[in-house]
Length: 307
Image (cartoon, rainbow, N blue to C red; front, side):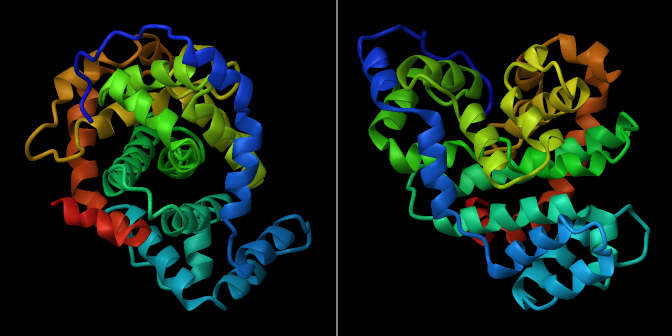
């Protein structure tokens, strides 16, 4: 999904009709009802609200679900520092990943199965999402951001709002794609004009329904317009950069990815906000490509079929 010149966005009469009949909060509520987390996630949420709960008590609940335990361990190990010891317990994984990240990853995996019938480049969607999450984590490390590893989850979920739009508004979603073409920045503008709201708004609202912290959904809400982020400006800038790095990787870095084109799509304000430079991006791109396969297999095994 490299950034190239797209079709010009032209206002049309269907835009106002769409705004009259669709509200992104009601759409999000329907999606939140569809994405029903496993019982273990509900129990984890209860424990997280209990000040007396410990990491060990949360780990014991998660370990009741072998499939979830395996996914968490796999993701935690894929994100550990090179040369560090393997993570072998859920307790260690929670220390490494963080409870909020674990909840976000649970919802991501549930969403992957809930919306798997959507025909629109579903595997490419998860490929892009995983690469964005990894890029955000690596960039946060380069910024020396405290607890920056949580940005993996923000990156993983940054486009999650597209799934309810495709699922509940397929005709309008098709109109968006037909008008905007593939580039994300044009698609974002087309959503505003044709639907009346964007996938970024839906995604942030969905994450609020899931009771994820505002440090995660805040950057998602403004990842296409980082200058608008009054809170978490560094985190939002990182997600903005990360999504453009991911655009250079998918749908296939072997054929169509172009980092130079993606760099030109990055808002220039983010460099001063983060202290990063364009020279940081190529090594980040290489690291993300190497680390992406195991994580993609965990979130959505079918995503590897695009290779």
